[in-house]
Image (cartoon, rainbow, N blue to C red; front, side, top):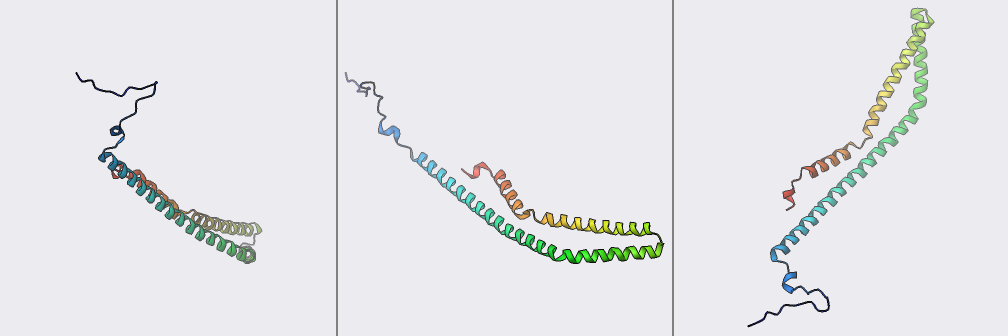
Length: 158
């Protein structure tokens, strides 16, 4: 009778695994390599997209700051001119209304209406400028990137 020799632990030590147990099959090695390749490709795409977004943000920030500087300069140049023009226009309108109606209250109401109209026009223009300072292109690009990531199918990674 032949006895099979099994490796038994000595002194309470665990049995050592055989060399055949630690080797991976070629299919498993290939699958791990493919997973690593896909992960590296995904990270490269992520870095490229992040780089594009950062470049777009930087360029749009430069444009926005340039527009803001120009708006400030124009505002500073226009203040004295607009102030005197507005005062003279109000005085002229009030005087013409007073000549036509011979009533001071009607003339003051006309000047008040003129000031209200001017104020409304200025506030509307400020809202238009405020909308242009909103990083529209960067937000749209980021939204497209996020929508693309949401719609990407899991089968594309495997």
